[in-house]
Each structure stands twice: as C-alpha cells, then as structure tokens.
Image (cartoon, rainbow, N blue to C red; front, side, top):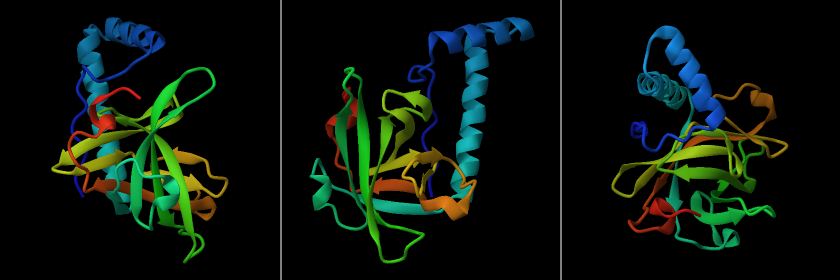
Length: 185
C-alpha cells in the first residue's frame, strides 16, 4: 500500500472563508499564512497515512470511459458529472462486491479531485483526493466508507454495522493521457 503524493500548496484549494481563518490563526501565533497552510498539509498527510493503515485496500482495474453497466467486478472508470446549476466534477465509478451481502455486486460512485486532496464541500459534494502513486497507479484518499443508504463518508468506518463497502481503492492499469488526469471536468 502506497501513500498518496504530498499535496503541494499550489494545488491546495481553500475558500476565501478558510483563507481568512488561516490569516487570523497565523497572525495570532506570529506565523505566515503559507507556513500555517504547510503545517495543515502535514497534519492532513498524517491523517491520510493513518487512515491508509487502518482501512482495507483494494485494487480496481481501470477502464477508460466505458459505460458503468459494462464494468465487471473489481473494475472502475472515471466520468464527467454536472448538476443543474452548472457545477462540474469528475466521478469515479466502480463495481464491487458488497461487504454486508456476500456475492452481491453493487455499482458505486464518489466525486474525485485528480491531483487534489479530499474536500468536504467540493463541486459534487464530498470529494475524494486522487493522486498518482506510480506508473499506471492512482490512489484514492481517504478511504471510502459507503453506508447502506448509499451515502459515502471518508475515513475509518465509524459504524461498521451500517457499512455496505469500505475500502481504500487504488486504480491500476491507468494509461497516461486520460482527460481527468490534467483537464477540468
């Protein structure tokens, strides 16, 4: 299991409200905003690493822009998604066996931010980070805990009895040049 690449400050997306909060915290402690953000990035790295150690890992075979219904068990694809207000994001679809009902397959999807980190309030709602971790391998972080009501939550399963599927996916067999690797949705 490989930890995601370190998020850099250039790709760190923060809201104006968060920037004001960082400025206040920095001023209170006599720090610069960038050093405060660096410290938060280190804390986030530690949280992701701890989550990876606690959560089961699964490798999903990547298929480029195939229809979701064509996926087989253990496969995934990434598609564009949008809402009626014009917000756009990337959506990772995968077909996996349910953990709470052995033998039953389920199609699941979570918004992802390629080359980014987890965001509680991304364009598609909760958005998982997706980072390249080597040739053809992309790591989702934090782990994905899908509840029986189909709501996905980040990190370690808080209520395993309500969990349908909980893993830390790594996409394997991802070719270079996929649109989602560099382009906006």
